[in-house]
Image (tube, rainbow, N blue to C red; front, top):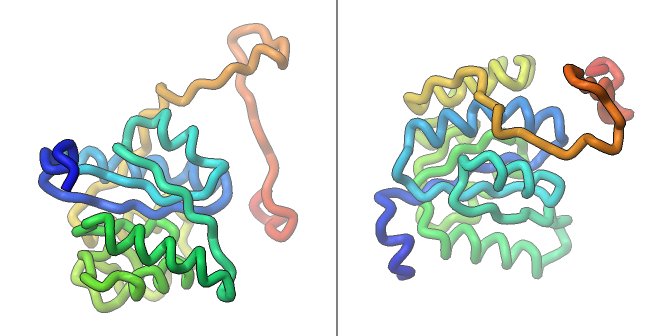
Length: 186
């Protein structure tokens, strides 16, 4: 085993794959996981658009990319299988809470403690109304079942060069968009 990883008492995987707004809403949960496990090695599994934000946050020791393989892409599934079983993860915080990530649980040979909607884990949340909740509230409820309190995150680290907009300080940047399939979110 890598000597650097031996210094961490626990290896944790956080899963958050989806759209920008949902990723931003999960920052409070991500910060709460880091606060609850300050000396653990925490890895985020996400999609390419969110790698830079995740690294900039400082919440994670490592960031892995989920290619979101189609069912018939066996090579990608084999890669996911190797990531899950070679990572030594003892705990998973599933902030995505979808069928895809529930399936990921079944790829682990040694089942980690799983916080999310996988009903067989003692850290899982059994509430049936989770999908109707606002994403931030859903993270609060699910992580509370794992003993973690989620608050609004400190995002003072969240910086980007917006000089090309030619804005004068102070300013606020609003992005009132959403997926075309979800106009009610606008």
